[in-house]
Image (cartoon, rainbow, N blue to C red; front, side, top):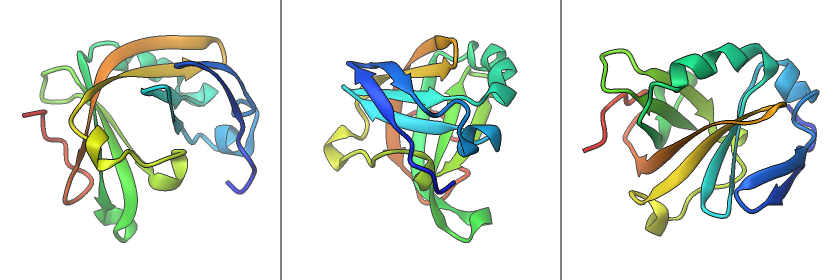
Length: 141
């Protein structure tokens, strides 16, 4: 995952990107990009079917902290909270995102959009928090 990833922004939307067809996408890695107050999750073609599970969520909780199983590497958990015992969740390394949110951005609401090569496929409200460890899996309090 050493290649340069480019995104052309149009506000909260993605006008174009070289993510699809990239080494990162072909390897099955997601990418989380932030712009204009929105989190945009880019899904590889191999994960398109996961959108069905994500759709049940009313809120996406993005938690940041050390990923225990990965030797404490900086990571994010994206929990698609659907108020069941088994919400859709994914953990990603911090290098799979293009920036850190500032302390003042934590806790506030923002849109989370999910993108495939076909465009924006899903939009939900998101919340961000820092946690002691990933996985967290805790509901928003």
